[in-house]
Length: 474
Image 1 (cartoon, rainbow, N blue to C red):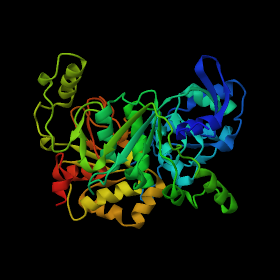
Image 2: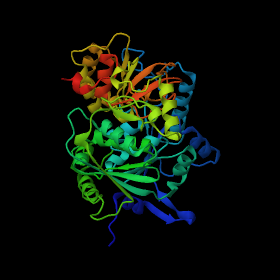
Image 3: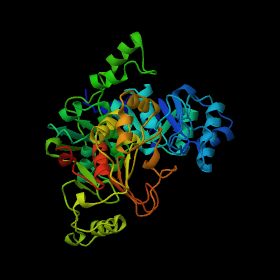
Image 4: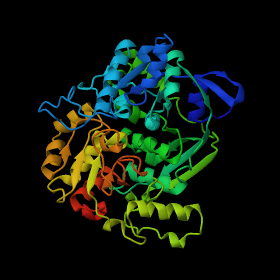
């Protein structure tokens, strides 16, 4: 019997038919919908007079456009949205989920949050499933051994109507992580270091599987961060084989199997691993013990350096696209060749997003903030990835630590990760950000973004500039 990879097992288990042109008709188990990308799909369904084939295999939530400021003492913000477009998008989704009987995480409810945070928290995300969403960072869910990827608006409508999609099988890439990392090197640092090494399109056309002892030592939050960031290396799919860490996270979740079904599910999930001797199209090995905290300096995630490095000088590069890209990035970012990363002053710090808005991320930021103060003039915000994460952080007293240090404590949402809500940078403002993208205008027109871990972002907020967390925590 031929040895197969985890990706191939998941693909083969969901293949309905092989189609001309090398495509496969793939069965889709679950879909997550949000207010920005789904309207067109619902319009198509309504115009065609169709109903969802399996409404209970979908969930919907508002996250991208929602404001995260708390306008009332009880935190309820429904009906208080000032941005007309955001209010319209939210109202439209609420009409659509009502008309099509889609389970909905209410805006003011206990399960509201970012799509890629609430899916795992609720147990909607399960090993062995296919999961799609109209958002590229759907790669996040692959941390559970699910085949998860982002899709477009028309494809969302296809899943609603037929529960299937035409897809082309990807090549496979294994990233083996070995060694023991420094305590202040986080999954975000590892992800940025990988992207810097292979490039922003280095995994294009490949499904990436993370393996090795350094991966097995990671929490589910860390694995989700790794898989989340693989879209920034060009891959639509990130994967980690499920194990006892996965099962411990999922057990007891609202939508996870219960009782005897749980035991049966775990037994089946244990088979979701690449076979010994399975062939990959590409293999990369990284010793995480050699890594230090990472910071992006340019306008793509692969323009990343160790925090103790100096900015590159394009003049040292051969004439060509790489040199021109470096020159353009430095000009947009307002930086000087040879400048030390730690000399770069910031105006904002953002801790949150589907990459780093989980309880572990907030704990890491609070550990740095405890007993310290945000530097004068710095606007620093902490945005939990979900209402449940916010409640858990408050139960631990993390909100009080952060507020006392001068951070704003927000409601759940995408917030400053993407300029689709009222958290935006102004031209020339510079943010230490835990989000996933740093391209021009991502956090607002003319805004400048430096990607880093939550602990690093908290340190930058307190120092007023990019800081080496290893020295900061000493």
